[in-house]
Image (cartoon, rainbow, N blue to C red; front, side):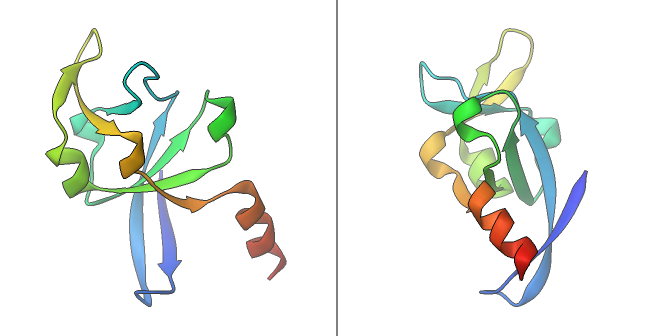
Length: 100
């Protein structure tokens, strides 16, 4: 799925690659991302983590690729610290956008 967002700061359309993740790795407070799914601009959505439900995060491809590789038990993944994710939308923000 590819979404197009208009960023007011930049004033241009930016295509975001959507990456769905079940939940962060709580023991290390990291997100494991398959290198095959990484694009230049990425929208991170958590599907199983209740406390992150409805929130959307931005990660640049450069930030992801700079993270170290670890195994998730099957494949090698980039381990990105949670504090690198930029919050871009919450359920409250989405409601406000729909009204405008």
